[in-house]
Every structure is written in structure tokens, then in C-alpha cells.
Image 1 (cartoon, rainbow, N blue to C red):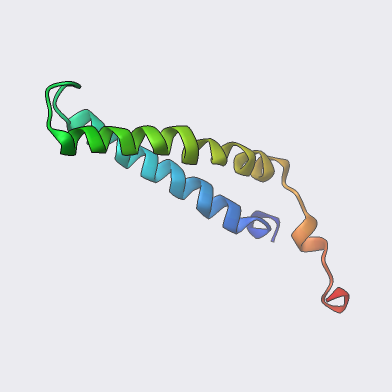
Image 2: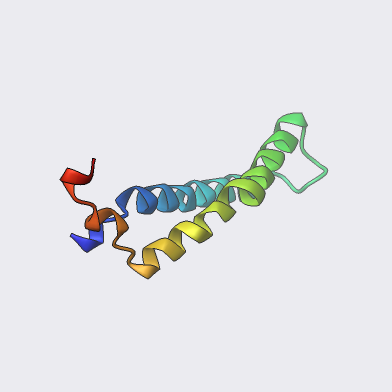
Length: 80
């Protein structure tokens, strides 16, 4: 059960990594910077946002998973 103790953190972190990979693929498929239109500039800016704001949130999530924290498993039903 320890492997599932923080399943939501795992799903969110891995999901962000997958989305980052998709953004990377999209940016690599764009024409060189400065040669595209507004749509291409918007794609680049959205990718920058994701890499600057969203992706760093996975660090603490992966740290939690690596620590194998048992807090959720140690809770007892009669404590609710």
C-alpha cells in the first residue's frame, strides 16, 4: 500500500512531465524564432510559461514520492 500512499502527487507530477514533453515537441516543430507569425509566438510563450511556472511544481511532488511518506497511510478512520 505504501506505493499508493501519494498516488495523486504521482499522477499530477508525471502528468506535468508528459505535458512538458508535448510542449517541447511542439516548440521543436516551430519555425526558427523570429520567422513565424503571431500564432507561433503564442505557442512559444505558452511553452515558456509552462516550463517556468507549472513544471517546477513537480520538484516537491517528486521529493514527497521519494521520501515514501506514510502520513496518509497512518490515518485511522476513527480520527475523522
